[in-house]
Picture (tube, rainbow, N blue to C red):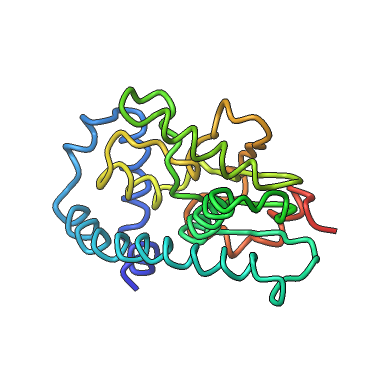
Length: 209
């Protein structure tokens, strides 16, 4: 509800403009965020973190279902995740890797993924890259990261709450062999556009028959 209010309120245009300023001016622009933006971000903070934590649990459940032959059988599996749903898929892939379940997933599509791609960070960059490589190793077919640098909602969440963290929903996951990075900026200007334009996005990706 908080996220929907942020998107639909009259503040949306102002927030989008501020996001562009923050993108250009980095930390200096963030320091200039008005009080009402900070209020919305504070409300979103707790909600977002709860959903993010639950996505890890959901990823474990999804992995268990895929590993259960009575549930999936020998059918090819394609996983599509939007926003924190992409975190669910990513967590699932990490678990499948740890259990040695390779090539059980045919294709993966991550859209607007709040998953770190800060590969150049001294402390955590190598860990982020290893996580992506493990996830990719499980998938036998295509692995697509669909992102939009215009997604000001996701941008605000990570500029305000996790400054300095690059995420796959805003930028390419570079340097990971076998990961296709697709810029969806022409279709997606904000986070809720992913489900709204999912049919068009899947047509662009040409990943499903």
